[in-house]
Length: 306
Ligand SMILES: N[C@@H](CC(=O)c1ccccc1NC=O)C(=O)O
Image 1 (cartoon, rainbow, N blue to C red):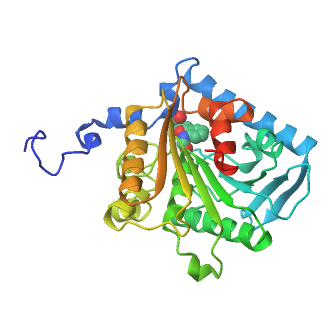
Image 2 (tube, protein in one colour):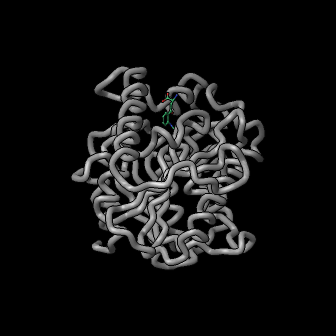
Image 3 (spheres, rainbow, N blue to C red):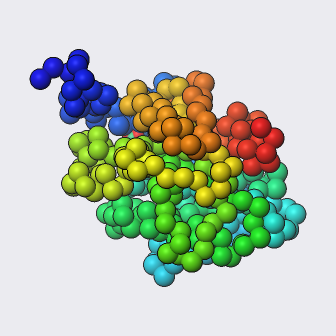
């Protein structure tokens, strides 16, 4: 079979990649340009830890709030100075390939957002091997239901996720809220350097244990669901920003672009941004800075200035 015609392989470049090439494409740390791979991962944790310590020391917050019965079902809420019931909430899901990372080192964007009047929620979920992907998706769903029930007067819930966390956030485009007894006031999604089609991930060394069957991968792929059975936004004004770093790998670029295109075709108010001169990790740690372009886009979206 040749790959140039309109055969089944067309449009899925990863199917033509060797195992080594796939591993490479799906190892974000190998694509950083300013640091070595290990140093990039270390710096990422360090900046996350420092931002979290600072956030916990300086502002008003509620830490380790249970959103479910499970030991790992906890979230941290960071409030702005001015107390109000009618706050916008940004709910963040950390990355780490569903196998690493924690809420305790992921409060990157807390300081610049709380300073502008946004409450920020950092969610913990049971990473593998304790949690399965289905459980993680369920936990993330529960965390959003919890925020809506706890703060029914919120001025909008905005979901933000990085990498594997962007995948979990994007899965919420498919959530069936009616069975949870409450429809969250979702006004926006900020999807940062995410993975939305898990089929290629199945074939990488690092992640094979998470996804054993094609069915697992498809059930947990927002790209696959949105393409085969498009969903509609509950709120037609709901915005989705799909963003990727210039130095993310070509597969990460393709994943983001294709999700964006699928969302647009499905009638979602989506936009796409390739962020200049940042890698998979810098794109997130720059969110500690109030002047960073993505911080500004997030604030403008929340306060409806664009
Ligand atoms: N072992 C991975 C680590 C990784 O992908 C990662 C690490 C921290 C935060 C997000 C990540 N990627 C996606 O979830 C790498 O080689 O970059």
